[in-house]
Length: 341
Length: 251
Image (tube, rainbow over all chains, first blue to last red; front, top):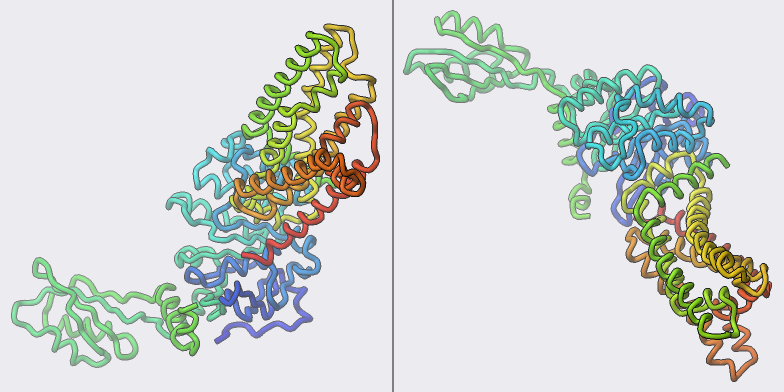
């Protein structure tokens, strides 16, 4: 079920920063990704979302020219990643998952080495390295040996490496994994700042994160793209604009059959008591159609109950994700086989 | 070329930033110092048929240290990159596979050369103390060190190949040691087949570092071993490149 923008034709492939068509890759008999097609335009921040093992890392490794695909086409800034690999690779800054680094090198040495590898002219290496150190907040640890750095700093070194030659495209595999909440916030704001100059494809399985940073999402499940769109579009498309749960907290005299009374109201599908404490009882109300909050309020006022909370939970990306991923794995006829393999 | 130098510099720097190079250097100097000392001691007890240089490069201790050198120097080259995952950022940079293989080989060859340089001091000290040549002629020094370099490049290339095949340094070291020893001990067959003569001796002498060293440390240059080692170095590096590229197809 491929949704979202229509597939670009071969002719437009050079208009996109990343253009992927019919990409397939399997490890032995286990298919990692199947017939994947998508494209990323200049200046976009695209989030690659999916449960573990959905094929995010495999796809990113193929995009960076590290793994070959079984079939399909990948074009990076107009260069084919298979036949013009070196030119395509020089356009990409890649942050691999877990950020492998040489532990014996100093931060500034490592970045200088990486800049030379990526073809930055010798004269400009110190300047580019300084910029990257500055941007990633590494100035005060630049003389430190990488092996002694904490996870957060290693992550930043990886990020500094990815952007040291100012590539057009940044491909970041799980850029915030293993960081503490403060570091996550920092990295996130760094990524937002980078978006002005780079096209970014980042993967994550943390929904709030991609929702905050990305302009568009690609949801991947079992090696297939199951949905694409902006976070708002995805929410809308999933058809659960109101996730269902309305929460009502009231205080009534003993012996009143609240559940029955509310259940009879128009637009209410079911009422579930959530428990009560100190005279206040809360209920979860599922709407039939539309929004029954006004009806509920009027009923509460008419009966003279005390009201403390009446709120509707808007669907989060998590609901969208669960509904999309859930339905896509259920509907697939060969899903049982995949589970076994 | 700039990319090659960047890679080469990192290889050499990382060898000296980790303790391995220093440990190898320490033990090599210990062993060769002992060999030199015993060679001079023998000379003190009366005339011998061989020069100091000839005896220095042809004792059992020398060959023992020599054989152990290669697994130690080469085991980490590729295996460590595979194991730690650094091969991923390395090969997603705009770098050709052949640049990486050559940079690693020439990096370790440079390291190997540097390891042998201090041994030249022994002969300088000998000359300074006795005002006597340690070798029969100046060419003998060149011969001995040139052969060391030639043999070194073949065995190091063999080590590169082994390291590129596995992600475990120990496995790489064991494979390298076995292969180097195999070539070395095949050479020893030339002593057994000495009486038989003919073809067998012709074949085995190609492998025999001891025979070759006997000649080269007298200043005799034989082109056959030179070509043999150069061709084998090239072959091993070619195979290393193939094995390094095959990482894309295995998991």
